[in-house]
Image (tube, one colour):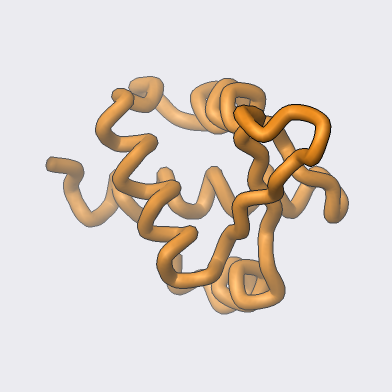
Length: 90
């Protein structure tokens, strides 16, 4: 289980990375690698799953489907996620 500070750092890193994508969806593994570059120590798989699911369930990020490859997992930031990031309450 992550500390509250670590949880906040992970959520902020995910939202900042998606915001820097300029509205484009990022493939899940690409997003995770960018987030790993921002954090020390790098993410553990359970940390990633817990935080991306929390952000998705709370509508801060949205999974983007791809008709040509339904197995591809991509994420984009939502308006709600941008608001949370600006409010620095992550």
